[in-house]
Image 1 (cartoon, protein in one colour):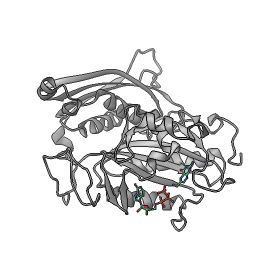
Image 2 (cartoon, rainbow, N blue to C red; image 1 turned 30 degrees about the vertical axis):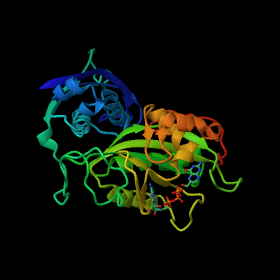
Image 3 (spheres, helix red, strand yellow; image 1 turned 180 degrees about the vertical axis):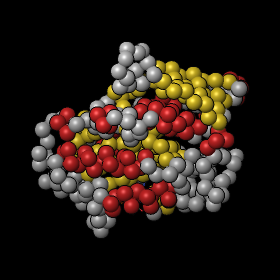
Image 4 (cartoon, rainbow, N blue to C red; image 1 turned 90 degrees about the horizontal axis):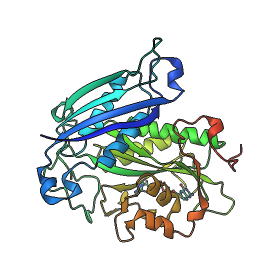
Length: 340
Ligand SMILES: Nc1ncnc2c1ncn2[C@@H]1O[C@H](COP(=O)(O)OP(=O)(O)OP(=O)(O)O)[C@@H](O)[C@H]1O
Ligand SMILES: Nc1nc2c(c(=O)[nH]1)N=C(CO)CN2
């Protein structure tokens, strides 16, 4: 077996058993050895034949910065699960270091190391009629819900747009968006792999006096089928008080599925890519920020950084906070129009 090694991936997280560790971020450092067969990549020189180590590193940072866990053992398991969800990965060895752990004697580092095999985590649901093999061409499927394309474990890479402009001041709306990210991360078989900065954006396609939105993009990998994911997203929106009666109205939470594995389909229940994403700076600017290589599929598609640059209202999208998933209320940036 061959190995891709990533060492010293560092991010701030709020993990630990002690009360203050739940709120005060501290550094976590992760080393991983990803074992897979690299012969095909060696011959083809194609990224599709290996694991994109940039994506893997972002997935790890997403986990460190993500939802609280008590133990570094659990953090290591979450990292292992996320890496094993990448196609082709057979085995991973994960070390999580916590150099500022609350230990009352002088010490340099504390860490745990675990090794997990792909066989340990085959999580496809029993009713998931998985097709193994052809996983390249998703173009123009009529129905995004009932196909099971992809790898043996049907892991989908999804891009979600989160937005809200109702429900209080910036801190309150940020809290709702943050909860939504945590609920997405908690969906079975789903792992958040990237979260953009939080942006304040002018209400697009709505009357002039509509309050500004807060928007962000979330990247995730999931074994949920796209339609199942949409249903769960509707549940999350509803639990935040969303009333689906009104189209393009102010709302306490909106989660749109922007992309699933680059699929193109015109099913009205779930159109992919999201049919208006290509025009929306509030989608494209954060997406380009969290994934500078992102491509939008479909007839209006292209490189997301370029589409973002070409939207007429790109200037009306401004960063409120980079580390909004962990920032305290008073670090949420500029004075705003959300009634603070
Ligand atoms: N890619 C998609 N993401 C989310 N919903 C979609 C998508 N494609 C189609 N839909 C359908 O659109 C319906 C309306 O969605 P929603 O209420 O979120 O629209 P909106 O936020 O008012 O407008 P927009 O879709 O322009 O953002 C949903 O019930 C859903 O079935
Ligand atoms: N700035 C901004 N404008 C919008 C948004 C949004 O999330 N942000 N959502 C809409 C419908 O989903 C319509 N207009």
